[in-house]
Image (tube, rainbow, N blue to C red; front, side, top):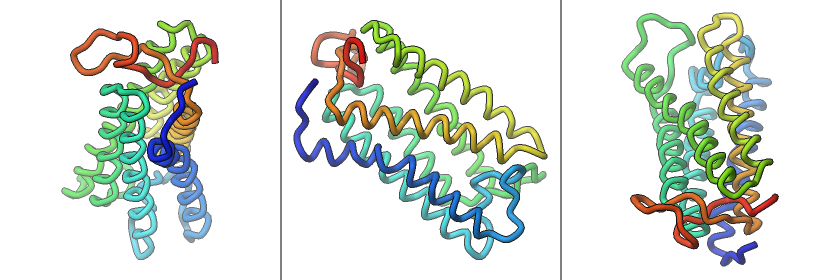
Length: 221
């Protein structure tokens, strides 16, 4: 384990708190929204209408928390790759909040709906990519648990997000994707915060070497 300074631990705590907070927020919102169909409608559609500010705020708060988490990752691991990917996801979430989506399967889409849809790409591809980076890192360290978990999460997210094409169950498949990815991010943050690091993920342009590219897992945990 690696001892972390208080500032780094607080920054990493943002990655622990952010994912469940986002999920709890949209679960409460949808339970209070008359006529909202969680099987068919996406989470982003909660940003439409009179009370849409609640989901907009949810996107923005989660995005900011992930930015702070990325700073903590950088301080804790000295890696460039992982924090950069987290920043990509965080910025995409903030853009998703600033530009409200259109109802699912709307054609044609508005300009702000188009921007929102484009911003969703780094979110739903960025988290699986994060998982695969961690899986490779864990494999090098022979940490089989995190290798398998990260790989399975990446594959499952990429599979379930295809369900957005379904008019009847787009919301359900998106929620499954979100829970899978957000749970993984939460556990990653918990693990790094606990000081479980490994010298595997390289800094930008460098080969993985001791100390300079440490990230997330110990030898066996």
